[in-house]
Image 1 (cartoon, rainbow over the protein chains, first blue to last red):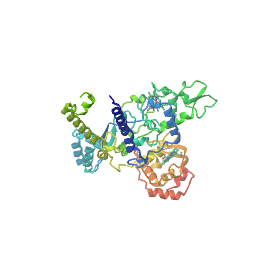
Image 2: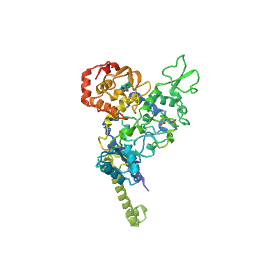
Image 3: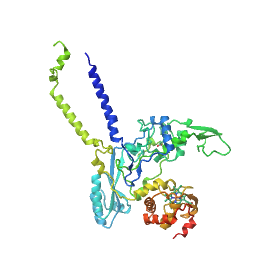
Image 4: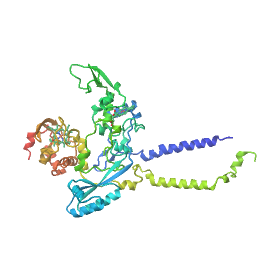
Amino acid sequence: MNYGPLIFLAALFALSGSWLGFVVTPSFQLGTLQQTNTVGAGLTYPLARPGLAQQGLQVYRANGCVYCHSQMVTQERTLCEVVLTEAGTNTTALVAALHKLNPNYNQEALDAVLKSLPKTVVFNTTKTKADAAVKELTQTTAKAQVVITPAGPDIARGWGKRRSVAEDYLYDYPTLPGAQRVGPDLANAGARLPDVNWHLRHLYAPAAEVKGSTMPPYRFLFELRKAGLTPSTQALQLSPGIAPSGWEVVPRPEAVALATYLASLRADAPLYSTPLSSAPTASASADTNAPAGGANLSTNAPAAK
Amino acid sequence: MSNPMKSSATGENLAQVPVWLFILLFVLLFWGMYYFDQNSGWFNAHVYSPYRNVAELQLYQPAGGGGNDRGKAVYENVCALCHNPDGNGKPNQAPPLVGSEWVLGSPARMIRIPLAGLAGPVMVKGQEWNLAMPAMGAALPDDDLAAVLTYMRQSWGNKASAITTEQVKAIRAELGGRSQPFTADQLQQVP
């Protein structure tokens, strides 16, 4: 029995089908992608990485960092909240409107809300309902706005403010989204850890920077030099006991490029494809606390709420 | 009927496939198409999960004009490096902007600082700083500089009047191409 032609056709169909689906369609869809503008501020996004950081990407690639680190934040939901920013003049109407939105508010709670503006008055709702609530509140001469926050496990871990989209990788070649997560996601490593020197120290001795770190040290990216009378300006400021005594640790050019690349990693600009709003100005101080600086294992860090 | 290949080609065996299987396949196909229609975003490059189509994405766009986003963005890109994103400055690097008399005071003085720089001893909130700030704002367009200065004057609890593009333009013209940074004493002369 000659099944040859049939097998040939089946194989052709299977291969060309997946080629069409995985190569041709995405290339039609995203192949002509260009810089866009961020929503709100209208800045050009993304900008190409500086040259040193681009060299760093090749070092990242060559050292297989991608086997333990992804650069791809996922998002499961989008949460909407209504924040009251100004009480306006007609407090009675405002109180009535608030009570209608949330019957749990009693008079005392409402007084507290009006004293500590801006305050979130409706939690975890849909955009349609939030818009309706804002309309109702503004009719009482108060001012309110909808705050849109992407949510999901990655975002709760503090790995980013929003999901990663194709634009984020526009200037990276090759793109290194990664598939395994032995260590934390690095899509926003530079936003969390902007200090190049921290990255250098961490690459030389991860466990000295992050207690209990299982990341392998990359000591071959550094060279040991006999310490002179005065410490060299390029040498790392390591805590005592890490470098052999009488020697100092100086990063090789690859290490500097890699650390610059890591500090340049940041994908949190608000884009059309990932709606997200900045928190109202007065409460901004509450969520701009400085990055943890890798003080604890960020993989197990609790939800940054 | 000696050749089995031939008999299968006659269609005799086809009739033995039960009708419900065809119906099931048809229903599955229909469901697949429906699911695709609802969730694919029709190959639009901007639609990513959790959004399912352009209409939904459009619905979730934040309302425009809420606050000074441009000023915030410029601040975080240009000035926050030294003055810190929360405006509190950094020890030995840059003085605070929160509650600073230079930020809350005369616009004409404040606008001059990023346009030409500031060097030498300067008192900020009763503390003396003696560093140098390059002309960080000289390369910014007038409207961006006005936005960022307004952002500084109206954020983190600061409350002062907004700075307009016209004010920045006028002072930039007045300074000409001045490359020499100001000293605090020189700025005090400015009304």
